[in-house]
Image (tube, rainbow, N blue to C red; front, side, top):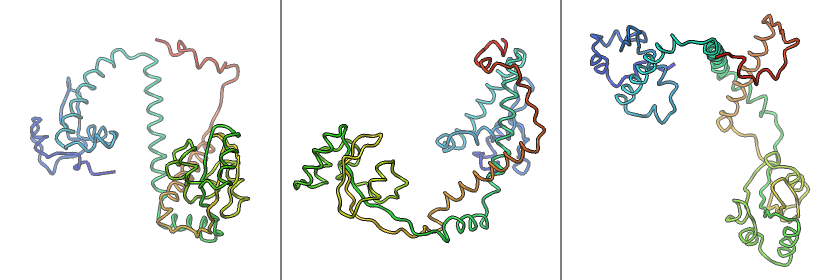
Length: 281
């Protein structure tokens, strides 16, 4: 958790709010304003800032400070009215939000604690250390709407039309300006039966028509190569994501298994969830 001090433009901003607060006393519970006696603290403000999109967090400190404070003043004043108007529907919604927040906080801590140097090393070795080299393909394609068009274009290429020029002239996808070049990739990155066709081709071969969900393709395989395992740094983000996901799934599974769960859904019509009246006014 970042230190709260970073959220301040300067301590002078707090002093300007009327509090005689010394720099060494500034903390999460420092009161920066009150609304009808309800306190707004520096911690409240820091929590709001932490939830803002990055573009807002980049605003000048003094501008952001004043903006958040004004927002909290407005919310606090309105919340006082809302408290007196609280309905059972509101109570349910607040409890759902509270449970979701607490659950997410547990999972965020779980995910954060899962990424260590030892865990990353073990995950890398398990996934890549003994992996066989994989084959990568450098290919280009032309994609059109009909099988007849694809067959005609393939015949033109066989009769001498350059594949890249054909792609620029006929292909309907974003690779057309580059002669249909798709670069290097593994077969798993492509849809079937496009990948199946490539797997059977030889370097320099042109094949088609090949139909996929995107249309009809004429495919050219330029060359293939064996790709060595990536370095740790190249796949660090991927491994960190895997570790976080695995830790979260494990935490959820273990927590629910240990919990005493009793379902009382017998006779409850699932369609009732669509009935807004069930929540009351």
